[in-house]
Image (cartoon, rainbow, N blue to C red; front, top):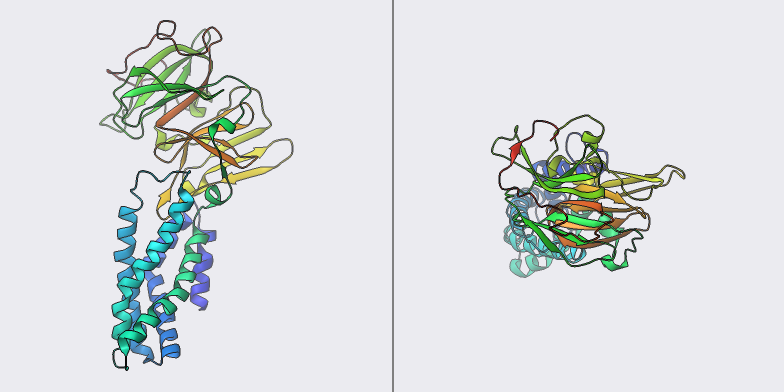
Amino acid sequence: MFLLLAVALFPSTAMANVGTPLMWASMLHLAVGNAVIGIIEGSLLARMFKCPKLPSILILIAANYASAWAGGVYLLDHLASLPDITILNIRYWFLVYVLVAFVLTLLIEFPFFWLAMRSQKHSLRRALVATPVIHGISYALLLAWYWLASGTSMMTGLQVVSVAEMKISEPFSLYYLSLDGKKLLQMDLSPPGPAEVVSELASRSQNDRLFVRARADSGYNLYIYLRSGDRRTPTESPVLEDFSEQAPVEWVIDKKYSETARSSWFNFGPVPAIGTKSDWTYRTGFWPVQGIRGENEKTGSQVYYSLELPFAAWPVRNATQISGDYVVAQLGKDQICMMHLESGRIALITRGKGPIVAKPKKADKTVDSKAVPVIPAAEPRPQNGQP
């Protein structure tokens, strides 16, 4: 029991620079945790159902390794790959995952319980009783173990609302790539409007995204980051010239740390802000469990939300802070969300990737292909510095 307690406390103190607490919890569970659980279950079975202790322990250690590897791999391969798990239904899928994992484990471990009780009268009937009783105790411990190691605050601490409830006082436009990477789309955020196709694209990688560069005179140009065959030589292409009067420049470019944009996977850190100046500053972390953090420079108030579960781990990428202390960001692979972290609200705007939020030019609030020239992105060029 002392060993189990020590293991249970470990996830909360694991260092983020060597992985996440959930990674360590999963590895420890698969490597040695199953042996600990088998010892606990075998001891309980021996005491509660009068079975030989050592054989029970050995058999149930084998049962736990079988259920962890067979059941765990099955669940992660199938449930985690479902495309419709979003911030809108994550709580439902969490309950489904917990229930399915419990039932699946019972089915896998039942033959082992029967094997440990086979010398007793009515062994099949007794095994049917012992399996859910004994496993229910160990499953509660295992559920607590993974809960401590996971990032759950985005699921438990944020209220999911419609994007229409996010009242934005200034005009902003959202630009993003379609899920298949073939279209550049635009939609108004204040108030929310329908998406419009701006141009055709040739994006193939999940980590392709939009980014901006400041023009020499005024305004901003919109570019697309395209991952090439050689990771060391990514490419970029312009897609809109002088498309905005205020747009978020990636912090490594803005601070002159680099002239090269980064892919979505590496686009984390300080969140650029546009619109009315705010006392809040935000930053996103590399690992899903590091999520997004905010701090009020005047009051010292802090907020932090993340989501990293065994079947859903969503890093926060491509974030932009806009007026009203809202943050628009990509959550996971394709959820473009608006968050108001101070009030604990989140809304799913649309599904897409690589988003950029910008203030439209005063002359035309909506995108006009004649007033705002569209430059095809079919022939990307290597990133060799400023355009």
